[in-house]
Length: 242
Image 1 (cartoon, one colour):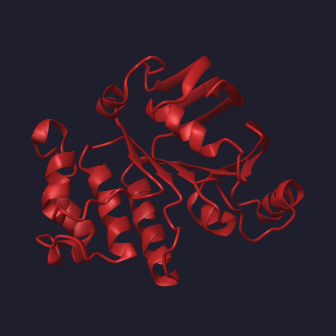
Image 2: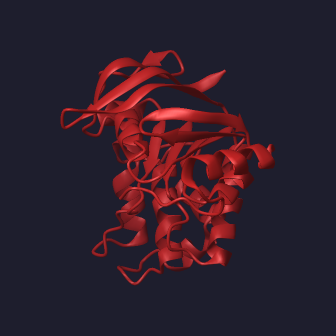
């Protein structure tokens, strides 16, 4: 069963055809990674999935049996999609607690991801729950993930979750995402580090000029490395659009 199913998706942005004929699925409790260089269309794809300004010309976006293609962003959240943006969008005027309260659907704590469950997964946030501003980059990323989880999603989309983080915090992000998979949450990861992506993802797609040019199992490290090198010219890190 796929929690998210994308079929033959074409996306326009400012009159340009950015995403062309993309299809993939994210099954329950599994993870998919999408890699791509500057201008490949990754951010536009994510915006289209979330209903955030990119215009879908053809195709389908399904979450379970619900077709979300014409639904506003808030309905997509209500149908179980959560989003952790690249910029994190943490507000220095709000405490950790206030960020979680604002994000809770209908202002109520959900049965799966209550405040207590969040702080069990992110104990450092509980220590700093009354703090306004002053969070480290790693703490901000943990809060961004926590804020997404309180909507009780079945699928979480993360755009560059390791950007600017220390190696220790990258490992912490990896541990958190693995735990979410164990709990049955699907993960769609947009990431510039193919080695990190391979640690988290079950399958990897490479996007170039709005089209999928490679799809393979994350365990096939040699194939992924060849695909990355063929598409981008090097195999370690891939720069992404802002």
